[in-house]
Structure formats: C-alpha cells, structure tokens
Image (tube, rainbow, N blue to C red; front, side, top):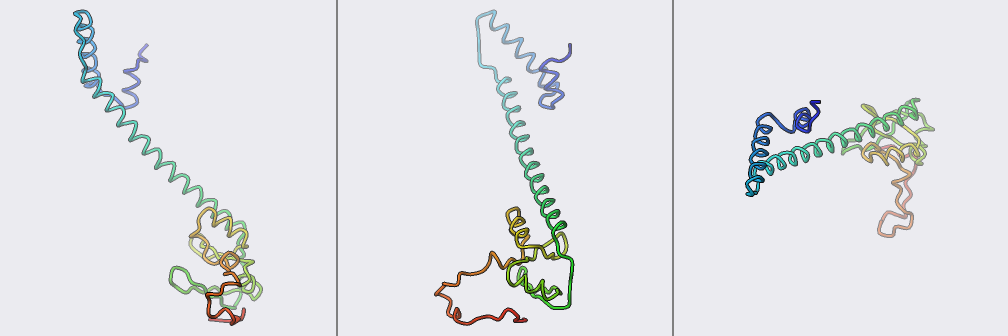
Length: 179
C-alpha cells in the first residue's frame, strides 16, 4: 500500500526518518512493556506531538498572513477598477488647489468640474500614481475600502452650519476664492 500515516507525515514535511525510527523504537518498547505489564510515559510521543503542534501553529500564522495580503491586493484592485471606470478625464485651465499630506497640490480643471468639486458633487482620489476626479458617490465607495485613497470629498467633510464654537461662522467664504 505505502499510504501509511508515516508516509503521509513524510510527504507533508511534519516528520523525518530520524523521528520515524524513534517512534518505531518507542512503539516496540511500549509493546514490550505491555507484555511484561510495565507501562510508562513515553517522551518520544510527546516530542512528536509538540513538533506537530508547533508546525501547525506556524502554518496557521503563514496562512493568515497570506490571506491578509490577498485581501489587501483585492481591495486595491477594486479601488483601481472603480477609479478607471468612473474617472473624469476632461481637464481645463482653471486651478484647483488642495492639501494632501501637508503639501498643496494643484489640478487644472474646467469651471464646471471645479464648481462640482467645491459643492461636493465630485471628489479627488489618489489613483495608482495620479490624482483622479470621480463622482462623490464613487469616492464614498472607495472610502469604504480605503479611507486614505480619498483626498478631497467636500460632501462628507462639510461642517455643520450650527456650530457655535467657530468664531468666523458669520463670515461667508466665497465659492470662487482662489488660493
């Protein structure tokens, strides 16, 4: 047959020839003790069990890491697909500036897209290498997967109008303010 537990352990890498010889000697000694009536605790069985348990724990940890990496890769692929299918490629000559990680960035847009960004109808997301303009609803779907990919989404970042702690709440900021 050749499909014994011992062969399976060899194939799986959980046992080697040296361990097999020890186990066989221990089995023979145990059988001999059974015939003579002397049964003692076998250290070899415990060592083999401990080695198998350690290997299984290591395998579980590696599988967990692989699963997490695969999930992250799938999320990035979903974000890339959402951006590719929904990006607005039309650019203009009006500047729109925004902050990303402490650096002021500039995009050149047409007036309608600039106004839509200000009002929250459009959003800016970080694509694989470039900043892309997508509809606000798409940006919300991207934020569900990775919040750091959404750079500007005025719809979700608008403060409440009734916030009394802001001392400049009475001053209106013009939408066409260029900075």
